[in-house]
Length: 234
Image (cartoon, rainbow, N blue to C red; front, top):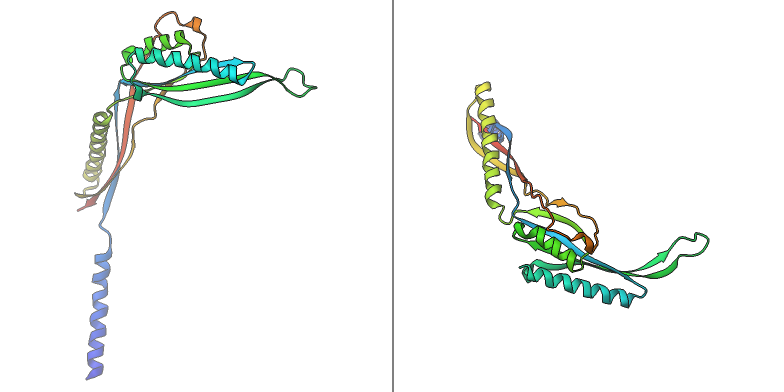
């Protein structure tokens, strides 16, 4: 009697295994990628404005550079740049050597001091005049201009919407071609987003270069989003 009970239990367990295996199978799915992008004009810029001074001694070079940078900062504040939008990003004191005579060790000929200020310009219509005034006040180095969006969320969300629509369009096209039905969305993943700042390079210049407002072409930025969506197949 006990053997019959054990045998029946064993048979019921074996019969239950295929059903459990079926339940463990992941649902059939289809995965499609979508792309969306929005082009929009930047409305702010970040520019690196610097002063470079040379002198026979480090103290003299430092004094000259401090005077130059103080004048630049004063002009920027007069132009409406807020204190929070001015930040020292690089400061360097280094010796200068003469390497002309290769038979002799390099000869110390003086020192160079450079100071770089990162300036956030929130009104692009003022950017040309700000660059002009900065050079006129003593700046002799502008490393680059980086255009940005002050509030990018609206353009970013529009790119997301377009990317989702693109993925959905492809999914329904494939479903119709293959004769399958689309079930609920199983997962959504996103890539992309805000582009890196677009640099506009400018060379070191002298004060004589400042004769008129610097012409600025802001162009457009492309905000792109790539999305991958997985649907269950009915």
